[in-house]
Length: 125
Image (cartoon, rainbow, N blue to C red; front, side, top):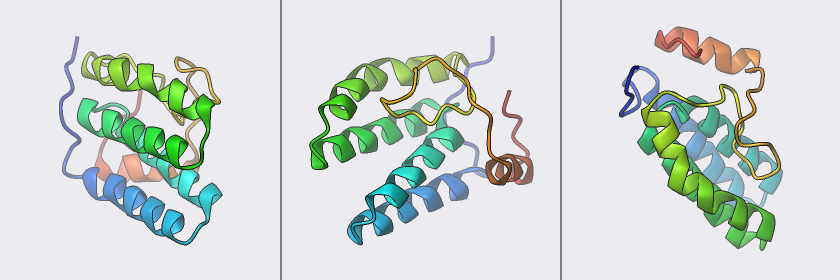
């Protein structure tokens, strides 16, 4: 079993760019675009406990700000268990992380994100 810790330096700029795009879109009131960037950050970082947990923290904050009980209550267990699942390499690849999707269901990864993983030399499955 492989234990994962922090996001690789080759992948980190893409993860951080998604979080910055999230912040910019949120600041401009474009909630749909902001959420999409959080989902992309989740997919990029979900294999790494700290990055994974941080995105769920941001998703929880988003849920609080938009007053969505579903997102708020959906992210509390994800904050507790998501990082542990990442640490031991048991994540549903491609899962966007929102409370609107089953937490253990894998999803196809869009081409643009596949290309990011390839550029960073990171295997996603």
